[in-house]
Length: 600
Image (cartoon, rainbow, N blue to C red; front, top):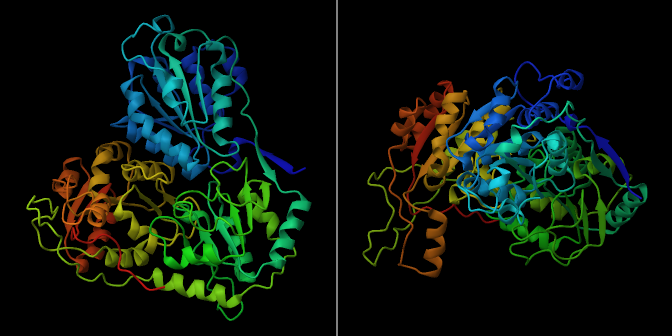
């Protein structure tokens, strides 16, 4: 039977205000009656929550009143989708569920995108949804909807608070569910009349311990035997809650044994990319990280998945995107390490270990495994990764085929363009080692995913489910959660304007980051698909954009337009030195779809 360790919710040091939030004293609370709405706030305090994100609604006024005197910061956003993405980002970065609050009907609908993202990304999150009064249910009341019907298929749990005395318990259990096993979102319905009812003398409940299962000794011995038989073992990392210790220990172990390590799609920050640990097998300490899988991956990474004779998945099931649509690596000998069941995994499983992957690593590195590996295979993977991630100038593309005369070329009027590969080269030199990178979905994300290394955990927030509009809300949350760290967001013009209004939230709440808005005048990912399937027939992908720099300045942020590679470094420095949320408007050739192909 596997060992199980339990941890209180403070298992990771959470970022926040200079003064820590003191847990609410249950004795003091017991001496004063609380409404259910106020008790929800008190329990969130006990759980260690430091921020809630949301758009206010009349359906949860009593919770807002409770937040008035609370040490929890209320971050007022401009759209419920932005609030949800900020909560998701906080969950991704801290390990404690991020909290969003929205109103019924339309508000809940706007927040749905973040719940879907949190579910597919396996990220802890709480969404509180104000509901109509209990007596009005089933009468098609104003903004009425079926909470479970909407969210039941894309949340770990959906619960409605009908008993005011259960408010603290419901919050505690929801935090526990969101963090346990495979993390995910929990949706909590809070009827407006129930919130105002007395919740009784109880001052809340003790936060629930979360199990962090560990591998049994017999399971580790079995894995060691598999390693010692393998010539081409491969490790794939992913999931949540990787720490500096677990990431560094895994990479030192993998480098020592010449075992290549790949990352799941948009889980690139699980391990440090360029950790050096002394010369091993003549490799001069180049480290074991050899790239990522999924969209934008190098061909060398796909070959590794195909050629491995033993693949260890640590925190990442072999899913759709990782395996190129269930086509790669399905039949190799497989060890799967996940904290719950094998949800999301396809293909072969020879050994399943129910364990918390980062904790499992700390046990793995102490074993006596001494595999006789194919060092040349490992060295070739490292060399291919080095070539793939070295920025090279992007060649001038051929003109877009617009033979149908639609005028849907998407090209800006300005003929001066910036090379994103050159931008990434500058960022590699300028960014601090623990900088947080955020982006949404679109071809613009191919550049930072390929060229920007990650050296510390909790340094990437990007949607694994391909949701657009996440980058700017994530940058706001990252800056508020980690006020001492540099934050940079890379956004496409389409992705940026889906939640770009949250720049106002950044200005209002003191979030500081630099957003690079890549303007190519079209939905480039879809346009690329059109060029492959319907050449010469662009349709429905052209964008009409504002002057993003002037738009940013109108919010009180910093804004500057950059059209030349040689001007980017100083523009970035000016934006960073402004002390404001900043937008650099980068004009890109609309014919460029991705970084230059590099033979690996």
